Image (tube, rainbow over all chains, first blue to last red; front, top):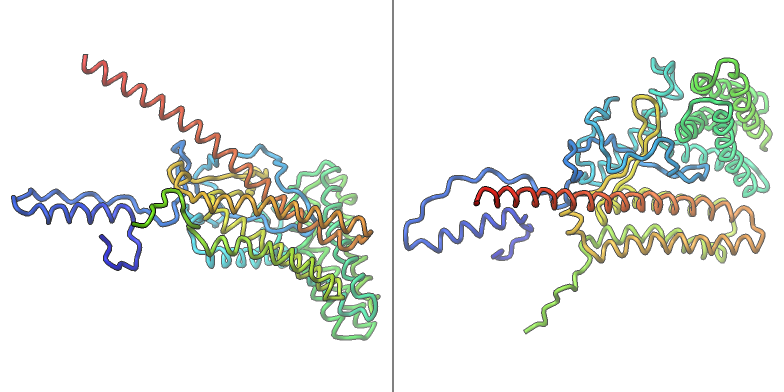
Amino acid sequence: MSHGDTIPLHSSAQSDIDEIENLINAGSHPVTVLPARPPSPPRASIPVSFVPSAAPPPLPSYQKVPPSTAPTPPPLPIAPAAAGSRLGVGIAADGFGSPPDTLTEPVLDTVKRDLSRIVSNLKLVVFPNPFREDPGKALRDWDLWGPFFFIIFLGLVLSWSASVKKSEVFAVAFAVLAAGAVILTLNVLLLGGHIIFFQSLSLLGYCLFPLDIGALICMLKDNVVIKIVVVSITLAWSSWAAYPFMSAAVNPRRKALALYPVFLMYISVGFLIIAID
Amino acid sequence: MDPVQPTGENYANPKTCFFHVLFKAAALAFYILSAIFIDSFVIIFVVTVFLAALDFWVVKNVSGRILVGLRWWNEIDEQGESVWKFECLDQESLARMNKKDSWLFWWTLYLTAVAWIFLGIFSLIRFQADYLLVVGVCLTLSIANIVGFTKCRKDAKKQIQQFATQTIASRFTSSLQSAFSVV
């Protein structure tokens, strides 16, 4: 049938061709021309997803769960997993309306989408923007790739700045930051706050970005005074970035209890940056 | 005449399978071999964890979709609650999935986790806490994918059953109707 076709035919196209060939071959007696068939539904070569229970085609605001810098087992559903994605169509509310067949998109699209999500999350968390007062909405679309890169970067910079014991510095920095993020999140949760575990991890990771910049500058300039100034500025910036999210999550009487450990962690990282030589 | 191979299908997506295995194997191989060649823990850590992270991403976003037609992710809904979503393809497509592909997918997933557990035990025995950190991170990533996809598959099976009962019920009623219309 396919004489050296390079493009694999879809099954619907194949049956069309069969039919046409049949018509041609049976040309001895006149055959009534069949009315044009309505076009068959598009069949992608990788099947498009839909749920057999005839729910409206899922509009996933497609997110991935990138590696957690603080190793945690993700699937402990806080709300029971919506089995089989009975997604309402309105999930793509925050301008993230990805098309229904993210299951068939090319890989480059996925990569681009994830990268742009990292950038947008960074902008939301660290830079002033109108959404800050509503933390739930601001970091609705959490991801852990950004925090992963920032923690690794900070560890690497600290390790490079150190003249001795580089490996230990890196390991300590990574472990402290990762464990610290987990503990801080647990702290908020145990104080009766309403925050989602991964959102908080993501947030604390993104707030490391100013400290990353500070550490980089300190690595390049060796003057102690400059180091102190730079670290203080970036420390204040990090704390300012983390403040609204953390404080909005807890009962106002317990705000200080939730915020103090965060400041403490950033201050200790700041000292680590200053003290490295 | 060539003997016909009725069930000897090849891999339907060889490139995807390759990548699926590539990063897992690279992470494990680098971790194991680095002990011999490389002195710096930092490099071992960063490279291994980076490869494991890449593997996590590839499995979750690419090979899960293509090889077994499953996907899982997390969403935050309007009320600010976190919801885990599990999604699978429709039944005909699932049935059409290549058996070899899915065999490879699941087995490499499980085997990597087992391998990391072994390596973790080794580093425990040797009291190397920092290598345990590396193993811990990689193990967590593997287990995350395993749990996510297993839940997807259970969902898919449940849906198959529901679909089957629905189809049987609808066929039953339609045959009843046609029986009555004939009489």
